[in-house]
Length: 116
Length: 115
Image (cartoon, each protein chain N blue to C red):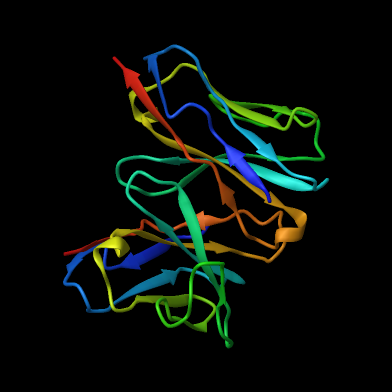
């Protein structure tokens, strides 16, 4: 498994502002992902963070709203831009050692975001 | 589209008893992996158990075991000798060979363990 940390663990933000969430892994991993979990809901994949290139976004998520960086194999950031109350969710970072479907995904502790 | 369905929003079990959580999925893929993740109130997603679709033998991890029925597209989780620490939201997840690493999650089942 991998040890994954996220910062901040929680935050309360004002409408219209932006928040950047950091994800740090204790070892190099090939794949890093960002998920959103809205209150009482399941997890939805936002995007795959690609090292050295633009992230791959899922349907319904766009780069202008959720810009992602991945400067190396152990670190990624997700920014939630121009926030509204509908962005209040838990945001989770996930990693896998390889791109194959047999590679297990491990999750960070999540960031609980509340937008007022 | 690939979907994962957990038809039990909530389940409860007495401590030391056995409980089974249901999961069904829809796919046309032949090779895939299935997972059960646990999310306690701390919200940390913890891998409980995983099953390779090409393996007929059901996976087991200590008190956790699965009943994998490939033809029926069913993947239930059995928790034996339930403990208070097992109380959590349980998510079933699916990842086919063609999806790369993309996971599709079910809606979750909230498990309560009564002392």
